[in-house]
Image 1: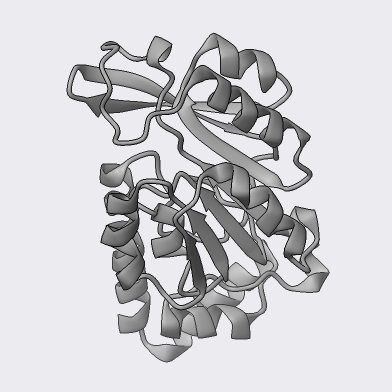
Image 2: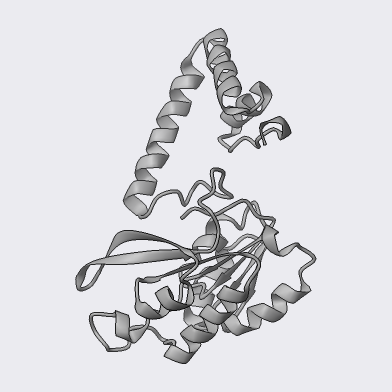
Amino acid sequence: MHIPPCLHWVELFGGSAPLSRFLGPSIPGAMFELDPTAFSDFTPALHSNVSCFNLDFLNAQSYLALLDTAAKDIFIYADPPYLHSSRKSSRNIYNFESSDQLHESLLSMAAASSSNFAISHYQCDLYDEILHSWNRYDFQTYDRYGARIESLYFNYEVPHELACYDLLGSNYTTRQGFGRKKARWLANMKRMPVVERNALIHAFAQEIGFSSFQIETSLKNGSQPARSEASH
């Protein structure tokens, strides 16, 4: 998932709580989850930065109104139960299903939002119609019935810098592969003689626009360097 830089985030339909688990330690945010079972499974392990609400997504609008944060500095993510009409089976699979009307309320809320907003769902006519001006990224997933094409609908341009790189990739396999690649590169650079490593850091800084100090610091702690003002 390509999450743009943000100062605050809100996760609707928390479920397995990907934003809460990955963004929570570094960026404050909130998770809304109506299912008490899912809610109780994850909230004890979440960082203190995360405010957890055992409420439906409609309550998030009141929460957002209380934030002293500009709308564009807030990232909102929703992963609602799939529309029944988009599934290969019509039977209920969630403890708390979402009606077509609830999906329409979510999409109306999203379409009117000034924040960076992303929604995961199977590609379908309802979402395509209401979010027609949004971007859509399709990727393959698997469920109990086989391969499916899932879509990420989002109302912002694909960012070059991300709020969290742990979620880079369309699925667990690609994220794991990138994580291993990153670890190899960092290990190779740390094994280099200091002068050679600094020469590479200087070359990166000139090419990409980061300062040598920022890249050296990121190598030490494994974080993403913040782009210098001169590079904007």
